[in-house]
Image (cartoon, rainbow, N blue to C red; front, side, top):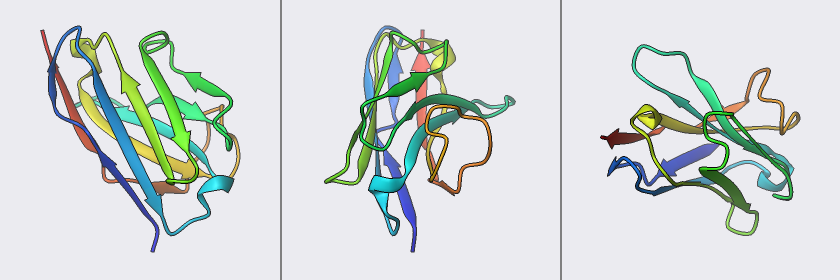
Amino acid sequence: QVQLAESGGTSAQAGGSLSLSCVVSGINFKSKCMAWFRQAPGKEREAVAGIDYLGLTTEYADSVKGRFTMSRDNDKKTVSLQMNSLKPEDTAMYYCAARAFGCLTFQGDYDYWGQGTQVTVSS
């Protein structure tokens, strides 16, 4: 059974930091592109960050560049999202996702999704 389990979401003040994690099981993690998406109430889901198979290359949405850092640990089958300098507009449900190809493009479908973890940033 494939599982992507996000954690770390909570409330934070603007300017603060949070770290999200996603533990993956049931798939060959090392052969999967991983990404973080988010969806705020009333808004479309948007890509936040993506990472390649070895964790050597990342891609970020313009809205989070310089503030968020995505990483992966293939031994622990985990991806993380370090979020600094948080803004109220970062408030959303955050999801991790996996697919076999297209690590840094965001376009197209992802094969596997987690249930999400809520991040709320107050001003």
